[in-house]
Image (cartoon, rainbow, N blue to C red; front, side):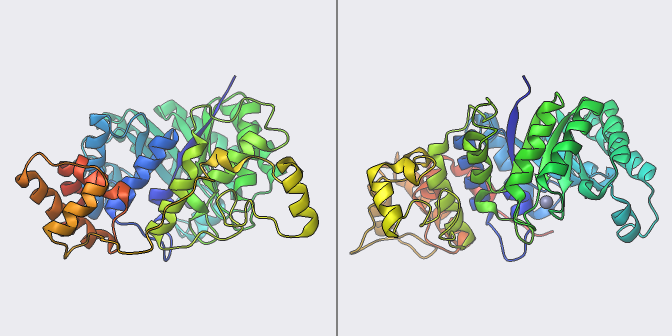
Length: 411
Ligand SMILES: [Zn+2]
């Protein structure tokens, strides 16, 4: 039976968003959290941009070491030869790419100023796919930007050409979040059955339906006989009103009527990692989690009104659809309320030893300790806020990659 997989795009669509940014160290940590969670693939950056080169290559090295495995790290490029050539020049070890180009008549007219027809778009995409494989790529997905405003005939033509060129998947980008769930289900079912290639759902939340249309579209793909890949972001961040929220999509696949009796929830996902991941992302973005955020908001399991509190206390199923423990919530959290030593770019040896001692990290000798301390200072220059436990552990465990990630040398 066809399956549903998750491709998270926080480190690409999420961070390209206005007012949302992550340092390269934080992006690396996001990849680590996604890997621990069991996500199939992380769209981890832009391999053709110079300021990402060290970050991308260091993460590929972590993947080689098994520290970022089994997750697949995939880079985003425009579907033009120039981007693909540059991506392989800067990041020769990259194995997975998604190549993106607009397909809608509206964008052909308004973005390309009428200089490109759908055939020209397909030609550019096919050339980019072929160049990528020649350069050493293992899997390529192609993205139809603004697919929701593209006719089915053009999408089928685009997908069949991509398939012929060796692409493994086509991304249906609901770039403006315009589709409704019923329409997207029908469209995806038809696209999957007519093209016999796997499809990705890439849905935005402009109408508040990012997660709903993602799972509806994915069901259409599965019913059309192909595997579906849903694009998500942590805490739903992304352009404008955001992308499909990772946790909302997962919970919908597990608990929504019409999904819960299917086997479509990806079995490798460990939902109990979500609480710590969502909190880390919120800290890294510097954006609080809204109180009503699905699953991880402060109110997601809070009850106050008489009837609700009484019902929830009698039996949680009265007012809770699933258990908070499943998301890793409910453990008491120790917050230091007295003296606290943090480490930052101006830290010294004593404070540093105290912090790592509390994390039960021991260094081989003074030389190693000094090296890690120096890296921690640079990491703080990078993040500009106290480093989290996981960030400190990462720097101590992978000093070579940490050094590479923290190095940015403008041309
Ligand atoms: Zn997008």
